[in-house]
Image 1 (cartoon, helix red, strand yellow):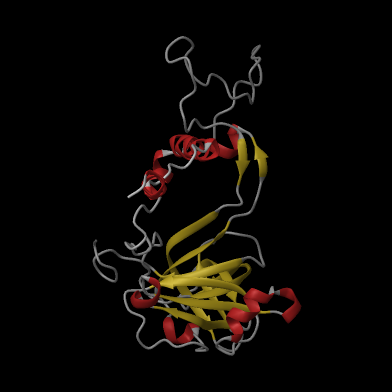
Image 2 (cartoon, rainbow, N blue to C red):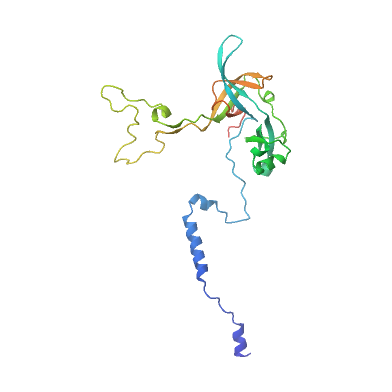
Amino acid sequence: MSLSSASATIPTTKPFSTSGATSVALSSSFLLRLPVKRLSALSLNASSSKPPVVSASMEAGIGVMGTKLGMMSYFDSSGTVIPVTVVGFREGNIVTQVKTEATDGYDAVQVGYRRVRDRKLTKPELGHLEKSGIIPLRHLQEFRLQSVEGFEPNQRILLQELFNEGDLVDVSGTTIGKGFQGGIKRHNFKRGLMSHGSKSHRQLGSIGAGTTPGRVYKGKKMPGRMGGTKTKIRKLKIVKIDNELNVVMIKGAVPGKPGNLLRITPAKIVGKNIPKN
């Protein structure tokens, strides 16, 4: 065996690449800059897939969506005056999708409400509804249930079949936006003296100590934006259901102004219609 042939069989090492070292350093420094939560969420093993985490709360039963019409006084059979909110229903409350544990990781029913023209929706929204042959609907909301048996797409949900007069319901909606408000209106603070030489009338006042702790505690009640948030009023009583006018009268006030979207579900009573865990 000649020396030249022996030297030909010896593998030659590849020259050191500075770009590769730079990419390794950049990737390692990028991982170090990631927050702990994001770093832990990175999947190091592509084969292991975890089920999706669902944070939506369990409902006591399927519900409906409606439109707030306003408030009025209702006289019952004994002549007692009851302040009620009148809720009307436009075309809608149709099941658009049924989600199961096998396909989506949880059981839920998606319901659509308020028919609109095609040009009011995007193409993905229209495609989602056209899969089941459903008319264009403006609002889509999910109701997470313990069981979705008996529900199918394009099924209409009627209020008269779900609730009766005297039932308790939970009503959620978006409150009326008040804009930027002070502490008196936003948190019901007491104002200062208007006379006797007082120089503090509607000011906020002290917001904390100086040297110790030397900062303002988180969550301190201060002026800020008020209203315009999602709120749920629980355990309201259904006073009257009018099938001719297609309206329902609920005792008390509900969030939002007239024309606002409302979500009506059976009142949740732990241990009775929903599990304790």
